[in-house]
Length: 494
Figure (cartoon, one colour):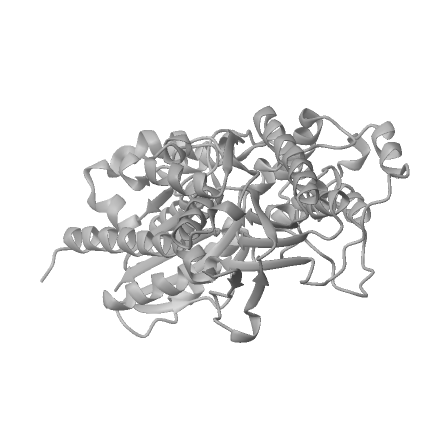
């Protein structure tokens, strides 16, 4: 019979293997191979998620020039693999004028021989910025280059009497990579977004504000293309990092097209509602809001017509969870899976997972979920360095140590909270683990107490806490080149 220490060691190995399998399944290269097919003089776009034949679209490229643009954490791998497909199909002469905005940290990947060959096949240049998931001057310059490139490509195509087709690659991180502020400076925009984050705003509220104060978000990238060539086609291939896969919120929706006949709330109205809800509107200069009210130059109207703009999700959190579930079952776990992605506070998500854990019918179970939690700073708390996943594990240990002090028994447990992009907050951590059983069994159990956890929580300094207290619970893999939200794994043996 295995000792408790051996069981905990096995749990750790299993969870890391399941996590890695999930991330590997959403590599952009494999997703592109499943979504794009080139044959003779046509481009076939498939739906690799539900494989619905009715969603296949064939695009005639016989008299067209194709341009690859985009931004986000996954677009380098997407573009490189597309280039290899184009090269094998001997269609490189149809591609030119391509630009990508990519997060810093992927320069070495872009400079590899395989990536350079793929990018060269489709005429793509790479620009790097958005350090630590934040827009910066480099991402502003990269976006400016993309907008210039669109104008150049459209002029060249019209001079040569070619159709213009823009393949737009988008993924999580696209909001930071595709940055072109309007009405305010980058620093002013960052200040507003930072205050929203600290007050607990979720991704949808953040993007409602980002969209309004941008020249490219909220469909404005598509409008820029159509201003330069009203007959251009736009094919947007998207890796989703937002709960429910709403195209208008992924990368802040640069190619989003409102459904026909919908009125709804305008981008400006949504922005004002969000700022009011979080009590930030009163802090903004009245001059700024007056500027928002002023009339703008007319923009091309977007219509829900795939003949002009096609948005296709080619990868999401569900794909990663499917592979995680399959691998977990192969390791003998009873998998209890949430049927939707989770969002809300860390405490809510942990409560939901613990409740599901209690429904297990076997003694070896795994609660499996994906999504994105929200960390909120309360009055009197400071804002240290960390990420939502490291703080989730901190909250998990606070709950477990509280129960332990109350002498409430529990089984051998382990939580793994992992990003799919390889970065949790502005840190080098990809995933974090936590386990009361491991804490008790390890010689490092004296390294922290419940009081220490509560102090780290009050300062939101989870990175320093885990780095100094239990560095062996941190997983550091570097940027993965993909991004489909987070993965949560809670394993228990009773």
